[in-house]
Amino acid sequence: MTPDAEALTVFGRNLLDPAKRAVAAEAGLRQARDVVDDVRGVWQA
Image (cartoon, rainbow, N blue to C red; front, side, top):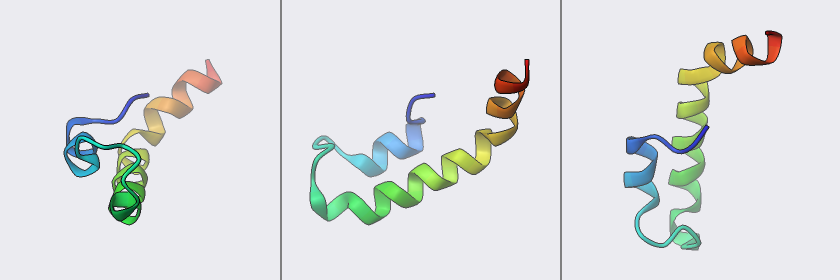
């Protein structure tokens, strides 16, 4: 999986910006909750 559009917007242009660390982590966790069933299906196949 790659970051979705919402996560990319949160990350901004500099993926290593420490000021974005907390919001980037929140965006990643949100995306993980959104795709967990899809990922589970791939692993169980």
